[in-house]
Image 1 (spheres, one colour):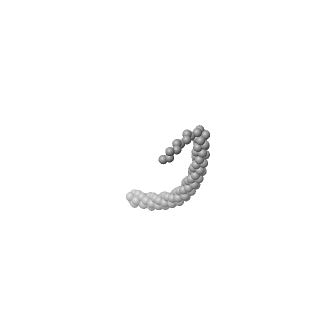
Image 2 (tube, one colour; image 1 turned 180 degrees about the horizontal axis):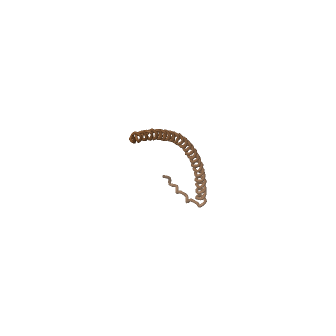
Image 3 (cartoon, helix red, strand yellow; image 1 turned 90 degrees about the horizontal axis):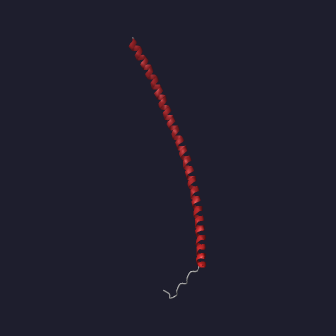
Length: 96
């Protein structure tokens, strides 16, 4: 260690250091805000794209379900008609 003694910090010295720190903090905060803004925009874009893809997927799935339900309804209607005809024949046979 040297034998020299540190000089006492003057208020003016401290003010310079504080001003430098304030400037550096402001610059870092601005850079951080810019990065956060860019990341936020990228995230919003990705969410929007995913939402569009999800809507497209569900539209396709709804079409498939609708066609399947329509097919089931048509088959059910056909079977109902056949069973009604069969029931009518049975009742006609039982009356004789």
